[in-house]
Length: 515
Image (cartoon, rainbow, N blue to C red):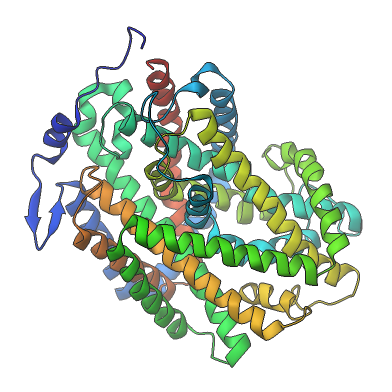
């Protein structure tokens, strides 16, 4: 160890500092003021949304438009910085630092670790957007590509879809996850966002500033999770309508949210190893089988060619897609890219903390490789297979089922042209539902840890509380303007948290250098 090692407090001291006012009520480990303020703000927000439904829908829509058009530069610069930061740390001598100390051993093998990373991070999203985005962006290509130039439009459209789920998304997650893992496992601090700021402001992280950071993280997690649950509910409702004719309505979506949250509660009570880990592994097996089915039953040679081209095209178009200056495709920039970066930022406390929780024993270089590069490769394979199949149906066969359908039916319309449509579509609905469960379970675990002051063994009743509250928020926002409301709240919370992430990078560098 170097002489400038951080003088971090031991876990017992930390627990006293930030948990001195903890109160046990009905089994909840209430950590004032984080638990109380977070819960009160969320409940007040839900009540306000339900009381003023029409006004809420209009306000949320205006808020999204204003933030995306005014701060597009901030979100894009932030995401670019985080990608460069991750690669810089991974390839420096800091990449040799092991999370947990030199002798730490990983708790989970690579398959289980990757399954949890993937299920928590992008499961529902890839199921929803894996077909929709490549087709949408090909028909309306970004960065000035002529739609009449089919080859260029297809390359740019596929690249844009991959970019939204590739390096930038996972760099945002990696920064939060690495910061939390390092300061918890190597410096003995609680697994909360405030710990990452200890190298910068010292013991003041246990005061009002730290409370503000953790409360913001709880709100970001809750609203980011609500967006994911909203997309999941929309797609499941679309699948049930496609298969059984069940009407797609807010009532159907809310019933689905209630049903899935009820199942998630069983996983919550089972715990991390028996609940999330097992469901995540089931997810990966089912997703892998669905992937292989589409690869084999679809235009296999076209898909393989698409995968090879997608890697090159993604790297070629990435600089243009990562630039905001002089862009004429403002509808794409604001409606897609800016929203995505804000969504990933707002979701980063959730995914980052969950990644940190399961990454003990990994080196920094190994962590960044597996969290940043491997999921990006999986995203390329997934988008190229599902999106490539839909594009071949559109451009070669003239089938416009995906192009002319509502977003939640895109996957099912693509599967309509493949064998065993009804069986595979039913399996897809089940897969989406399980992704739904793992997201709700993982998110409630994260909020439980933050509001309990970083305790990894907080009472299960508290996790149940946050799981139920996440479902209520998703249902309330669905009533108060649908997905527009969900997206607006994500962007609004992502704006201040983007500043938090940039400062967090400075604290992480200082902490890693002390090792």
